[in-house]
Length: 314
Image (cartoon, rainbow, N blue to C red):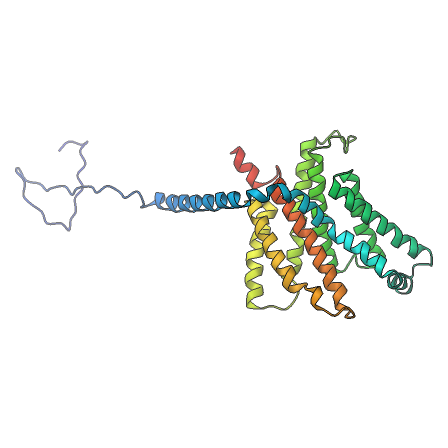
């Protein structure tokens, strides 16, 4: 036998005599395509094919709603400010009493504080909705968030802080969307291009949007349903933060938060004289604003600093 020949011998198989002596080599069986390393690749390919079909179905069924998403998202983002302005006007006396009695605002300054807040919230909210000076409108509403946190002494309240971080995230998504159309903003910052500023605002916006759900996870009593929703929701939040399948994970959070908002913050079922009604109403409209921010994320995408964009490159 030459040194280049290879014979596979099976010591347990029956041996048959050959002419000149020796043994019959076992036949080498071909490897199944599903065996070994290729098996994992096939499973991964099937999962990708299935998710692609689901994404195509979502795209097809949501196509008729696409033209209305941007306007709806902008309205929902500012709806908490409009509700807050209306609440201040309808409870003017109570608001003055609280600021003067508990926050020790002098007479006159409390009136001015409330009036500036109402005018700013109404004017800037309509600016965001109508796309008139959206950058200045966003900065005005950001100023209201900070001023109310300081004025009402809620800046270090965990629930208020997390919710308002998410509201700020929605406003940053509006700012990012406006940067696509207006290249004169921040003209004095030559170190950052227009595209870079937009990417960073989108990154900050989508990260801040998930803080409402984080607050929901770590507050309240635990149950099996709460644990299940928290695990699934946190997974979607992580996907939004890193920008992986961001549009679909944001769509899932929109659905989840909408259901949660209707059943948990049902302020309309509480008596008008009950003090809990105002708290539920405030939480309800803030959650709507965060839903609006997520809808805007669905419309404009996660931005350049995301796994979805990196996948397009590689």
